[in-house]
Amino acid sequence: MKRAGIRALVVALALACAESAAGEPQVSAPRSAAPGSPLACEIDDSADITGAYGVLSGAGGTRLSEARAFPLALPGGRVGWVVLLAVPNTLSPGAYDLRFGVREPRGVVRIARTLDVLPRTFVHETIRLNGSLTALIERYDPVKAAQARQLAGILAAFNPGDVYDAGPFALPVANFVETAHFGDRRTYLFDDGKTLPDIHEGVDLAVPLGTPVRAAGAGKVAFAGDWIVTGNTVVIEHLPGFYTLYFHLSRLLVATGAMVSRGEEIGLVGQTGLATGPHVHWEARIQGVAVDPRLLLEAPLIDKSAMLGRMETQSP
Image (cartoon, rainbow, N blue to C red; front, top):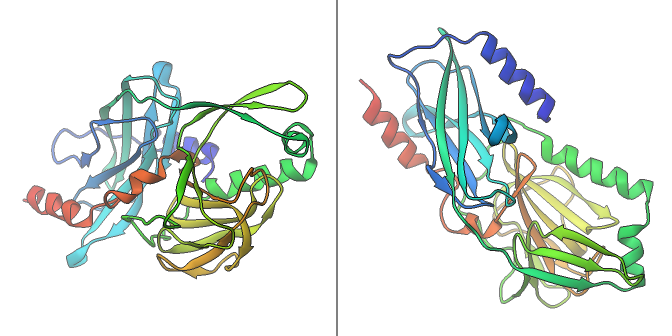
């Protein structure tokens, strides 16, 4: 769902809002997180929820990440609701606002929380580019611009029923050298002497050409094709609004629309697009905002058992 659509939903819910002090939904949200972290916020309620949203905002109400909630089937026939948000890697340490709207038969309940964003240090590096790679970035190309818009549209898609894998996720290759990290602050040095600042939104995992690249989790292939900057590219939808991306492949082994399982081969490592050596660039995006993919390896993004336990504890 595009940002304009989310804002419209927020406005509609706010207009219908009916506050309730008793029996309001319980929101379980992280109290602190580092830049680049995913935020899985759970809404536990025995009432009939018909919709919800969440917004992470900063000073002056600036919206940093926002999303609709989606229903999640739990053991025993229970249903919980989840809002997936992301902490942008550019945020400074401090307190930020988390706000939720939960639509029920009685109206909409608004709930406020605070998120403490922790300090995080990122690597700074300068990357020299040859003439062809300089031209790839500097030269305007309407096809390249259209592909960037296409990617943005894919990542903005929100399909409430597309719940395939909540993790934990797996690395797409093994026995690699990590040549670039999530959140690296980069300065591109072009062959004409100009420079361009940039932020690396994923991790670069260097392995030999032709090494199989595997899906980090189960899901639907939202895109598989060749783009100018990212080369042979695969984008996989795992949850509503949550995608992993794989760039610079030498060969594609899946097609758009295919269903894949965790660990399934989706392509081969290459050096296509804007790449200075053979590697796979691996990204994770929530509502279009990049999160550190390595954080997805540690634990499930959504812990269904813990969510069900909270719901049963809160039930009368």
